[in-house]
Length: 416
Image (tube, rainbow, N blue to C red; front, side):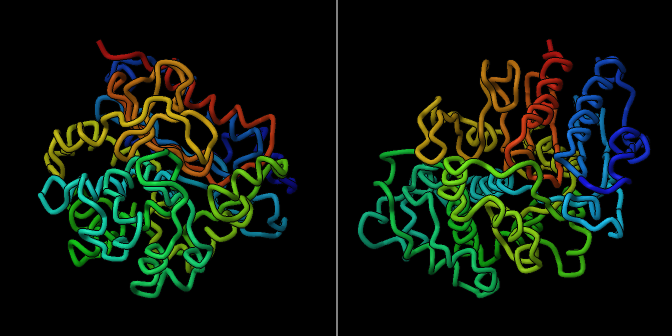
């Protein structure tokens, strides 16, 4: 980052730190020490100093109480390509960020909510609800296949991400119905980065008559008192969403090819597209929930608490238990080229080599475009949201982000 102001901020992070002191409890109230909590925050500061993230926001709850609700850096105006004269807006706990692929876990819970109400069955074929999937081998795709990345349609036609199509009723559904299959349903597993979300959105709309944005708001956000945390934003809020910046160095050709295979476009193109007003106001169930770190933590706190939050129940405990059931144990993912552990909508942790770092076999959540994450760890009694607007390419400093998760796992002990 080139501006002199940014260099000053890097070495004096307190000048660009905002702490919601009213929401943070005393560490001792939840069985922690101030040293443990501050060690996690120091890891956040170190990640900010890597210069890969113009701004970072984090919220962690432990036993339902907030232990960290802070932000550092800038939401606007301090990215590598911003002019020195650009208006710099400090990131705060209220800053809006994009969850990217972490949105898929929320979309999946809308399907589980329909299942809970008896409006859908996970082992039904898609074509029972979406006639577009009645032809050829598509007729064998089930709802469960979509939730577990086994539907055989991991890639989407490029036209599905033509932003104008996001605002044409029925157009995305038509495009997805015509998308070619890459393998038979259930015969292989491969991360459905965008396609699975569009199918989930079409299911919600077909069954309820509401788009997935309306459904989430009606059954979850309004009852639980959320302000944002939905698929896209009204046009009036577009300027408030933190733009994402490409940081670090470009990926080598092999890595860029892998990313393009997963996203259907280059990494840099995906970042630029995600900043476009048509993307931010559209509905992309797999990639455009806009919210705060606190709201992300709050949603996972509801899941951690068996579907109830502050006396309001929106899901049954059995529904959440079913959503967390392991469906693939270190199974080879054809898109990532790595072994992955999925449930019916979540990326699951492990005892070793965990996405959530440390010994976190019960953790469940989702990663969003490399370095946004929302998750809960029942063994530690925590719900976590980490947001940022720096999408790094190749850099030796990438470790600093994963070190935040490592410090959470190591500094917050398991409950007895």
